[in-house]
Amino acid sequence: MTRKPTPIHEAAPSRGRFVNSGNGPTLQPIDIGHPEYAALVDPDTAFWSLVRREKLADHLADGDLLKAYRKKKKQFAEEMQMLRFGLQPSAVYFNPTARCNFNCSYCYIPEKMRKSGPQMSTKQLLGALKKLKSHFGKTMGGGRLPQVVFHGSEPLLNREAVFAGIERYADDFRFGVQTNATLLDEEAVQFLISHNVSIGISLDGHVAQVANVNRRSWAGEGAFEQVVATMKRLRGYDNFNVICTVTKKNMRHLTKIVEFFHKHHVPACLLNVVRCTMPPSREVKPSDHTAAKHFIAALERTAELYEETGRKLIVGNFANILIAILAPTARRLMCDISPCGGGRCFFAVAADGDMFPCSEFLGLPEFKGGNLFEDKIKDVLKSEPFNRITGRKVEDIEPCARCAIRHFCGAPCPAEAEEMNGSLDATGAFCEFYEEQVRFAFRLIADGQAEAYLWEGWDNDTKTVFDSAAL
Image (cartoon, rainbow, N blue to C red; front, top):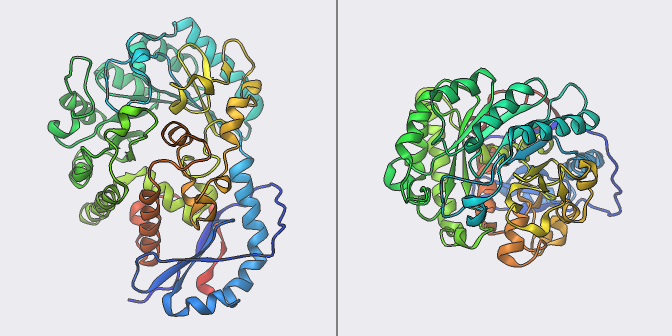
């Protein structure tokens, strides 16, 4: 069946300034691996259109598409400028303790910190939330609440303080907890659900032999059965997700893993390829090509399961790539754009109050921007360590500066690039992996299949501002 290129959806225009000093646009063709369509992309604005292969030369030769796009280019550029440089932090990854009861092989937090690092008292945690409330009260408007995600190490090792914070400030923040689930007993689950807390748990496999390879306690024991028991407790709770870290140890099982998650009625998951910030994580790094092959096969399986059952399992990190294409300013995650979200959409607070652009930097002291208890938050956000991250642009990175999909990828992750490849202005670990995701996303759009991979109502706050199908 022949399909026209899908209309492009954009979020409502946002305010900002952009100086257009070029003559553009220069649309770059991309072979997306589709038998009928190729993509044309303007790398500067993330504008794209799907065109029939036999018409590609006509569109590149100043046809109707280019003429129509020139009329909208300034608007697209302003929206991209605002998305990349006009946002303010609205979320905090909050580590109430540096300690963990697990010793996962790929953890980005150094082992010494996880064994004997500091832990906030209840008084300190409540004081920290009070200061955060004051800061966001001055910077956020429109009735929106800032988000605080209690993160790890393992936040529930400091359960009393965390729960006291959630109870005290329930009306002031949207709370989340990211946990290995070993301490999520029935009482804890009921408390979190009653306060509508977002709950993220970690599981890397569909059977213990896979799940426990990289995720083990200090005694070398896995927690597969405990995590599955928690999944059963959380069944039916929409504000729940599972993170699976993709490594060379489990990538061949990704299709079975999504089947397992779907069977347990997990509404959303993240299949996050391992971050290679710390040396041990590089030992389990998969190859780009092989990881992409298994990742895409797992995505296709989620669509099949949806067709079979009418129930979606959203793979959040891929859904974000799709939305980045369909509606760049509506994306939910900020790892796949530059500057990334670190320091400009969110920041991290360590257990001693030290502040970092992102949790991925917690083990890198040179990226400490200040201390929550000692400094003004607004000053920390302007500190040199934060500026290094918020000023990292894909245009300064080779070969990314010449890449057509640079605003669908963003050359993640700056911590990974710095530690693995020696510079913030270097690529991350998985260039080809992200490229294959984008190709797959375009194929889905060309075939009218993207909705199966997206949250229901994802486009409720968007409007169509350019319809290439009408040309």
